[in-house]
Amino acid sequence: MAYQALELGKKVKFYTLADLSRHLLQAQEHKYEMRLMLSLQKFDVLVIDELGYLPIDKKASTLLFELFAKLH
Image (cartoon, rainbow, N blue to C red; front, side, top):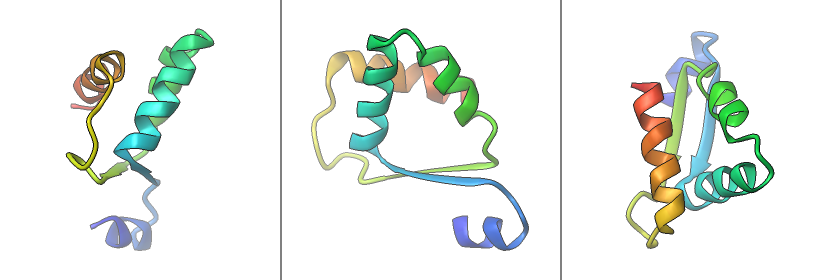
């Protein structure tokens, strides 16, 4: 799906869940999580791999939920 979107000229971003969680926590720590979430909303497709492989920090899960709600 992501490859097809790229072929159609769509903007695609790929993360593992662990990397995305880490980026969101880092952004929150440095007070730019809303800016990061807004920048992620500019992509047509956001691929999040390795969902469910590793446990997620409670703070990260809250940020992920907020991001997913904004993307919905």
